[in-house]
Amino acid sequence: MIEKGGILSEYTHDVGPDREHFPARNRIIAGMCDGLIVVETAEQGGSMISAYKALSYHKDVFAIPGRPKDALSSGCNLLIKTNQAMLIEKASEVAEAMNWELSDKPKTIQKQLFLDLSADEQRIVDLLKGKEFLNIDLLTYEAKMTPSTIASLLLDLEFRGVVKTLPGKRYVLV
Image (cartoon, rainbow, N blue to C red; front, side, top):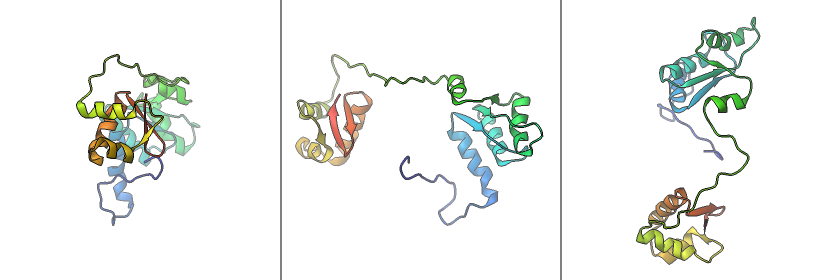
């Protein structure tokens, strides 16, 4: 998603981005977000649909205030004035309101002294021990497992902080 993007839609690929489909798209966006930020919108603008949907889903809504007489700021100003959105002026205010931790230090994962590993997981750990890294193809071959099995096990081990993924589908013990 980060590199190539993606499309999420209720419609098939042959349906165009017609105006009447925007409310459905806004409903999906409101449902997927943790918090919705409205930057600039008129009182009847499409972003207001997203904001009202987010509110109906009990999501946090934030708005950036604008000039009082500007038609494209009237929606944000209305959300703030009616206490339906929190006024924000910088990203740190959103992070604070959402209780997100902002830190320059990378999070450390505490290693367990005694890992409870399955036999297959232990085989992968043993193969990685003492090696700088192994790529997934070599791991699959040496572990004598299917690619899907090894991928699933590696993902689980990564979530548990046992292995780390390196560029080029390479893995290393943490």
